[in-house]
Length: 276
Image (cartoon, rainbow, N blue to C red):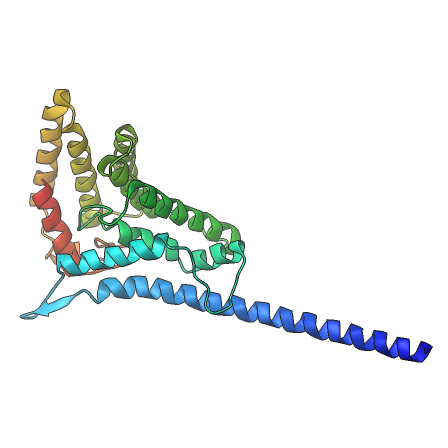
């Protein structure tokens, strides 16, 4: 009887050890699958934008409808609850760090915003836009903690501040005072010597913020002259640059981070000229 109990106990111990090892392997496999899913989501965000280019008589062009479709896809992807593949379930911390590793929330935020070539946040309510931006910032912080990545580079601050200013100043329920502060903050960042964006890219961002301030002041009867001054300033700046020139199309072109495309540069320039 004693020998039977010892054998039975040994079998149970071996079975428990094997189950634990199998679960550990399964967890690692799930992690790899989820990381692959995040990598694909990041790639898809880039490819969706690149696939909107059409060739007309040798010229590469974007259509407003195709860019709007990209913004809509990104808005839906950024706001939906994550649906696991099959019975794949991962912890919230793993989900955050894996998505941060591939920059998924940040890329989705840029596409959902689309403010450099479309009316900002075309498919988002103010609550959705705020959630998308919060997720983008959280992912950058998580990447710093988990992967040792520098937290919030200047270029990321500039884009996220600009996107937030657009939602606070342009969507129903936003805080106009906060929008004004953020536009001015971006202009200050662009004026700093160590900022990582310059030339044509900085010019486009500056005009975007000037026009953003001008739109805010249109709602204040006492500041209409300032609104006009901002619009004229932006128009003068835009008239002095040519997006088709080679020196405008560099490694930091509009919408330069993380995409570089001369056709999108020209569309962004035309969009801001119309706004002016």
